Length: 413
Image (tube, rainbow, N blue to C red; front, side):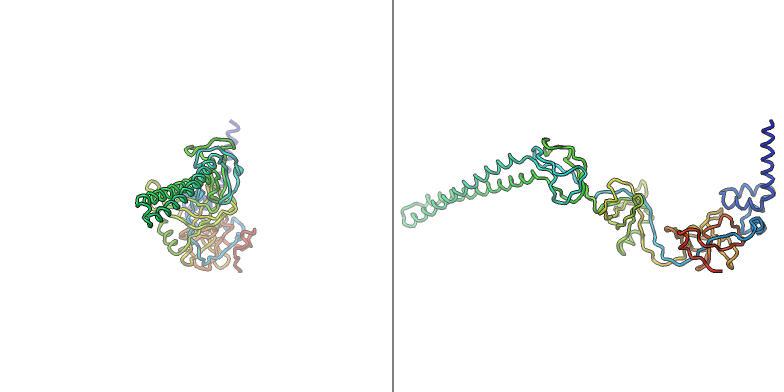
């Protein structure tokens, strides 16, 4: 019972202090706690304090008196900048060429000429298959070709003698025609055997498997001595092209028109971030239809990847950067605050008084936010110290506290 009495006493003291400082506490809660304005306005005696700072000069004056003087703030100017349009998305890295290495004839692996995970150049030897049977067949065909050539030579001699005998009426036309037919038959057989030689020579080339593109080899389940067949489902290895790669992502269909317009004007940059590294490429492909289930359009970007920062299958952050059409009034995003009536900033009047300004914004890009109304070019806005400000508060200008803010111009006076 005594503990309960102690708690009630503490709560009563806190409530009394809150009521005593209501002209300071209530405006702070209204600005920084969403939904608190309606609740506080319904409490008798707090309606005036719960009004927006711009409509409650008494609260602003009380806030200034309570804080004991000017509030130190860091300022920046509303500037005119050409801010690019950006579209953020989550993408997937894809290899432009992912090739399953398979044998093209039934044989046995003689040698594996690369290591698992190795980087290879186009034309490098990957596997060597047993070629003894193919070479033996090729030798047989070569011997048959030599036989065909000898038969052709004999047929040409026989035809020549038959023609000479026919001229002296010592031979017959039938003998000559038979010699012609024999020669053509031998020539046709030579052509057949030559074609067989070319086919077998091609088969022999299949016993040496080379890299079709430059890339990186995956795991190699087959080892020397393993029997392989052209009909096997499992590949000998998979070769992925690593440079360049494609990054596939989707954008809302509402952004399709501006992306196509930008592509018509030239290459559109895409920044791809993997961890702490960002590389840039260009939009390479837009899908020819909108996905009706998601309302998005597929896009692919071609990205250089010489250092292999991007790995096929990895999820990355992709940002499409569209060149701006002109300059706009911008402020640092750090100056923007969100309240019950929308976004607002604290602008500095006469170099010493803070004014709460409701502003309209279109978009943010990195550290900058484009303002369409509520501010004029060259006005000073607060980028640090807003939490202690109310409308009409006196301020003192201080320099930026760190290197990041050091790039923000500090107005004089």
